[in-house]
Length: 363
Ligand code: KDG
Image (tube, rainbow, N blue to C red; front, side):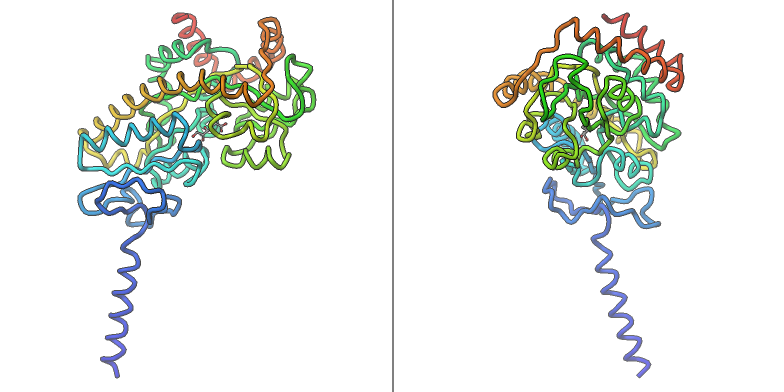
């Protein structure tokens, strides 16, 4: 009888082991990018796997989570990153998860901190909830063009911002582009500050954005990007603001009638890696990943700028477009000034001054 019980226990143990074999973040060695693989990056790694949750055999999986969909230049950039890394080494398989399938920006950053996800490329705005200095990028009407943004971000200022991430268990590897944000809504054309009165505007989870829209007379509410389309469809919010490619490629025009060229702020994307996983890599592996993030970032910027123009043209076919006049732009800026002053202290005067000086230098 004892023997039968032991045998049953052994069978049970073997079954258990087999079931655990396909656990969090593991992958077979074929380089597929199928979104329906067995990988579940949202599952926390078990204790043993905490620092390197995803090594099977010889290959380690690098999972990239983004919020926008697979038509967006950010997704194209992520695929470019995969192509470069996988062409340079057999050490990694890169899997790209779009449309917030793994997590929204803020949750994905938390997963990086816990070492349960390798990479995310969020807008910098939700990062203020982790590193307050990142609010510098949310100050409206500061960066005048994508080209100036490149100079500022790829220079010493951008490096200094990366240095602030270590304490939060994050590593910043490259600056990509989300772009200039523009307002859409389903209620009326917005041509001047007064037209914003009472409009329910979704913003990213960021106090500066919330305060700026309040100051302009709107009624803002923070929300994660993956919830946005449904919120506009159901009328929970009247409008939102995002760069033209996101508005077009996410089909926002199906639920929004009016588009205004507010161009109120430039949002960078930041290529983030989990520090606990990064620290386990060899120097050579780190170099390959860093260089790939930078090269793919150049590709993303170029594709994004092309898309910015074509998306605006496409959106004009579907929506009523209001070009904001230079005088009205000035009124937007003047109205928002108290918000800049209020938040500059919290961000850090040195950082804000440094940022504005860098911009002036490259203008
Ligand atoms: O993949 C990036 C998106 O998750 C997000 O950053 C898009 O700008 C964005 C927003 O409005 O949330």
